Length: 346
Image 1 (tube, one colour):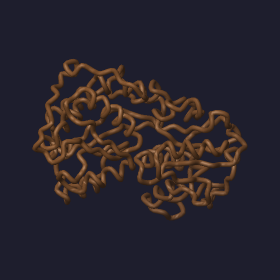
Image 2 (tube, one colour; image 1 turned 120 degrees about the horizontal axis):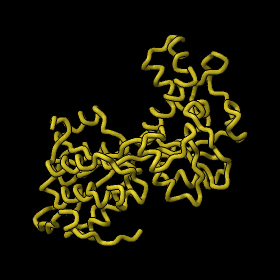
Image 3 (cartoon, helix red, strand yellow; image 1 turned 120 degrees about the vertical axis):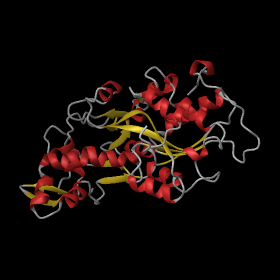
Image 4 (cartoon, one colour; image 1 turned 90 degrees about the horizontal axis):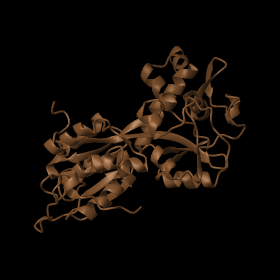
């Protein structure tokens, strides 16, 4: 992707030369594969517009990035963690134990989780969360009883779905996308089919029932993908009946090879996500180590640049790539400007 240089004055940002005294003068970022393309776009534009080196952006998943983020403070630790979910309480605790006590949370916008198949494959235009649960849940409700999942084809439980074998490529457990998939699709589908209530009626606690609802079958029908979306795309390319889970932006940049599914009768798009009509969406974040601001040259400038209206607003390059702009972007900009950490009450 090519970029037109942005005038720094238009962003009301000042490019400050990196100091030669710093042991590390390059911002280091890791985390979510969903946020990766946005962060990479911003990093490249930042390097073109400021007198700082282009930040290093790595993937690896939200959980992996936050784990690295929470390893401590210092030049040998990353400055920013990208995440397609909010940081968890246990991760905040791990950060604090390692000395990372002031964390700045930046919400950059929203994304949708979409289900897609080969462009020339079967059409999945009748999905409900119940269908995904019936297809992939380890245990499902059949004739009033909770049993090991017996379904082999989509049409086994929904006649409006194709009579093709169930094959799904889902994000591995280290990805933030997996958590949203579990909470907004599997768990809701489990509840919609009555399986959740049946599990509790059979003696499970609420907690155990929820865990059982998000447990996926292990017979080869559901395949965890630990890599990024390109690996999922490769799997679908080699399997005409496969269904994969992607972020909206990845799908929108691969419409030549992917066919998107509806969910609840709604086609995922920037418009349907921004209005809340599409049911499977989530906020995207990055987290800044406040102790590194003023130590790692360009860190605050990069964060401010990322959240600038010209980048993350509805008419910016991130929206063109698929990001749904945050209507409260101005509040996010203030958080960065004031270096306001989470839990400060401000």
